Length: 369
Image 1: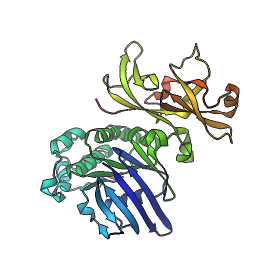
Image 2: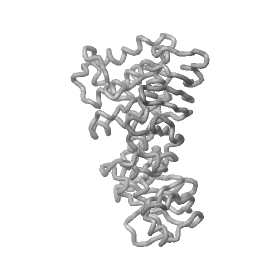
Image 3: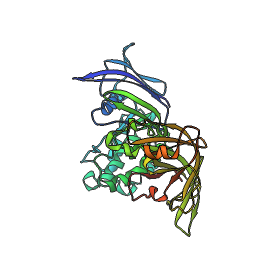
Image 4: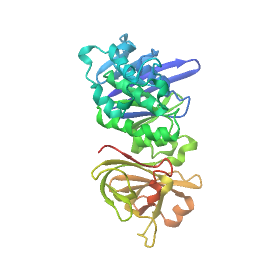
């Protein structure tokens, strides 16, 4: 399903002027606070009437100021998940889940209540009230409430922002299942590179109310200029891989990608499972010869395809590994010492511990079993 947004709107001194199109299962609106992310999804939801423009979801025009079209928010068939769950405290989980269903015409009620409950793992919570739930459980119920209403589109406004790291880790697999199994497109607001790398198939970068870049996550996150200065160390590649095998002797998992086999600390998934792998540029070394005697287990053959700006002490080197782009951040001194230039054959070297699930935001996420 394609989402098309081309709108202009002024909120006080702030001006939103954005245009993009996305057909991805999960499109992230990414950017710093104040860049216009929440205002944009509120326009999609119908909570704000744009000054000018057009919004179309799956061929259905929701807004067109040129023709005077404006579908009211309660008729847009859009599920909205906020930062805080916003559950009704006097209702049970079961009653909260069914609330949105009442506003959906019977002919459009295609969501299966039992399937949603199973998808989100909330069957044991159905008779509890929100005051008896953890933060992560509340967010799962909020997602379920949106799903039970049989939406055409789901909007998620930084749903993990109010949760601690443990609760975030609890929720992320459910959002991945939502992305991969329901067929309902998601627009997801975030300012976290780690969240976007793990969850998004497509990214729209917002800066000062304008679209600075948009495209596949793997392409957008390789551009350090797209990231907030504090998170530019998270720039890198996102590879789609498949679990090839598990090495029981060393407790490792072998992932097959177009770039080659990549070894990571053992993942708790079956052979054949799809895995999205975020490889930060700062974790990638470059060698002009295949090295011996290294502790790093991942050595991927490739060719330098591009070299970034040489204006500072660091430089980004893009390496084409059999069609997959790997980004490496090295010093300008190393660039010159290695004689790197486009077309030169090299090896991208990545330590397996760079993918330690407990070591930070980089790592792997699972696309389904």
